[in-house]
Length: 92
Image (cartoon, rainbow, N blue to C red):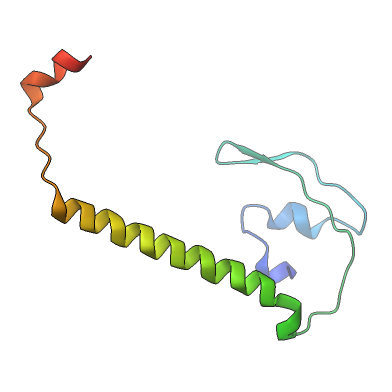
């Protein structure tokens, strides 16, 4: 990740880190984060062989999500559900 790609809510803290240094505990949207910089590299374009497994995983995840969404839409079209408010208390 280059400094230009840092999340805006952490940019100040991340920009101040040096190699090997660990950030303070940072909180954002009820989650805690710790960052460190292990090594610095000169920015460059990656070769396909370097990222093909990551690409495969991203594409697989996207395809699974699309299939899941399609399945849910088919279920919505196939079944009819009606919730009758005054009968809900019988299930509580």
